[in-house]
Image (cartoon, rainbow, N blue to C red):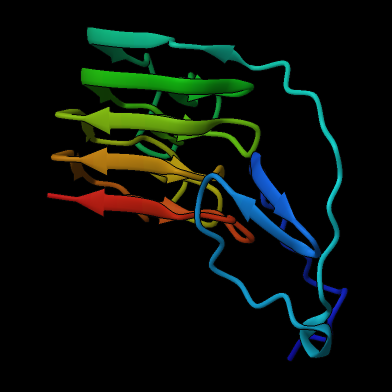
Length: 166
C-alpha cells in the first residue's frame, strides 16, 4: 500500500542527550525507524512559534444564507505557528469547518470544555470537522459537537501523539 519514502512523517523533538550513536529526545516517537521501513533523518530547525496563547470564554456565530451555504465564516478558532496554547469554554455555531482547527505548524494545544454547534455547509469532504488536529502533542478534552461530519478528527500524516478525552 505504501513504500518507504512515499509517506514520510515529520517529528519535531528536542535532543536531550547524545551518547555515541544513541540519541535521546524529550518526547516519545511512535514510529519504526529501522532501515527496512525507510529509516529516518535528523535536521536542525529554528522555531518561530509564538507561545502561551490562550482563548477563553468566547462565543462566535457565523451568519449564513442557507443550511448548505459555503460563503460564510469557516473556522472559529485556528492555531498556526503556536506552541503551548489553549482554548477553554469556547462555543461556535453555524461555522462551515469547525470550532477549533489546530494546524500542522501548531503543537501542544489544549482544547477543553468547548462546543461546536450546528455547522452550515454542504455535507462533503473537508467540511464540518468540529475539532481538527493536524499538529502533534494536542489534547481535546470534555468537548461537545452537534451536526458535524467528523467531529473529533486528526488530519492525515499527523505525527502525534494526540488525545481526545471525555
